[in-house]
Length: 416
Length: 220
Ligand SMILES: Nc1ncnc2c1ncn2[C@@H]1O[C@H](COP(=O)(O)OP(=O)(O)O)[C@@H](O)[C@H]1O
Ligand SMILES: [Mg+2]
Image 1 (spheres, rainbow over the protein chains, first blue to last red):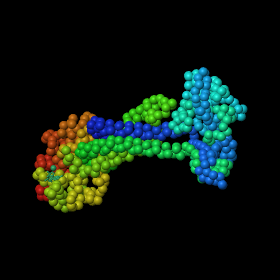
Image 2 (image 1 turned 90 degrees about the vertical axis):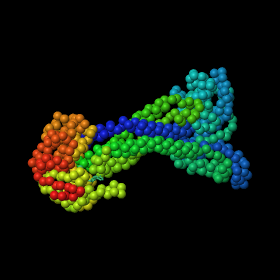
Image 3 (image 1 turned 45 degrees about the horizontal axis):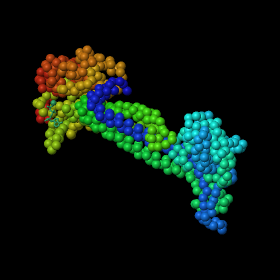
Image 4 (image 1 turned 90 degrees about the horizontal axis):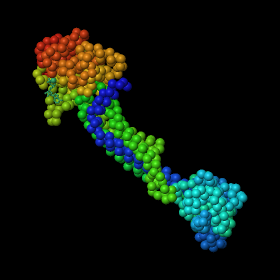
């Protein structure tokens, strides 16, 4: 391509596009809309996943219950409780289990620093920390295997427990007294967003090594078992094998829906993701429709240009311009109008997203703003945007270009 | 070079139809200088447009340089207009936003000639019509005579064997008209086939032969 043709195009383009400000704005606005809506849609999905991870990795939680079916001569209505031995019993028999941890808890008085508060205190193992994303703040740690082996009196506490007892001072190394037994704080939970919970947010909890916990709560039975599958897809299989194995051990019908109960976060996650994906698609379509308005404007503009330039087109045809030369000019021009309109929309959207992301999120009350304040861009959004833009640009350019190129030279020359 | 057989052109506007050309048959040989004369509305422009491949006849056969024009596609016709025929209009038809240089260059751009060739040829042509100093001026900054000389230079850009001129001097004062005629005569002497429409007997006298049209038919 030589430089003269583009220069001609440019002269023709300049002539009319001072008037095209409104269309440029429509393209700007359309780009802004589609990009922002997609960024918010994706941001919400991401935040949902982050918040969901606040509870932990994809988990199956197992609880005891009460039989609702008679089994091998035993009556229905028998309570079924879980015991610490069940951990090894299940782990040894179900190879699909990646991690498994027991959990017991009780609402107990916790005191330190001259203050006393009542909090849910839990007994569990090191594995629990990984499964339930118990990430310690700098300078601390979660409970570990040595704590369990040596029966250490240590505690890992939520960040709100730490501030409630010690204010802004570092809690690590301090002593807290639970049911008159002293424990040393070894870690404080790092702030995280969590939208899924039992017994309140992790920020308010106190965790002790399982055996140390048993010394302040003499019930032998445990409240629940946490299981992390090797693969999410194995969660249903694990559920049914747990029922069968526990049914054999505690003698209940594996089909008894009330003897044990399960909370499978994998199902919740899938459902939540489906909803957010739906929102994302919906927002993208709205954005694309906004951009479509701009595209329709460009089509009008190009039709008007084709008409206005009838005479010029006639001259070009008369001296030997081929059809594709005329089409190319109109196309180039359409692309240029689009680029001009969308470029600033793109830059603006990018900056708005960046600015919004600077807003802080309150981790203590993970509300709607946590979903709205974290829009994000991704390669996927960029690709969708470019494809939508390309299709719209092509469609807005092709029809006026074809119309212009089909002119009869002599009729066009006669046009005034 | 140009052979027309029973060329008819009917214009339809709404329910009206007007027979602008009624069975025109004529031949123009290579290197001839022919004038077309006739009263206004007799079909001279219509004939020139068909000869120049700008328009198509309603009926009849047009053989240009041994080739039947009826069989050519849109782009093939464009190529004929680009390389074989130079067309000069009464009202110049220059691109208003392009400079004199660019107007002359354009047919070569459409022909895909390289920059060096274009530069040489445009310089040569602007020199020949005496307007090299006006190369950067736009048509509105030029007089009618200058515009027509630019249009003539443009028509010659791809060195076509045939030059068609529809009342090239019609909008010009007599001095400018004479300048144009001098160039046309020179071109004819250089071996080009020239067909020119005119109302002016004095101008027609420059040519070898006169074709007279009346009411869409050749009269002499
Ligand atoms: N595009 C057109 N539509 C309808 N009638 C036309 C058109 N072009 C020319 N005519 C008519 O055809 C006749 C011949 O016109 P034209 O070839 O321009 O004559 P001339 O050039 O000899 O003055 C005239 O009556 C004119 O009105
Ligand atoms: Mg005429």
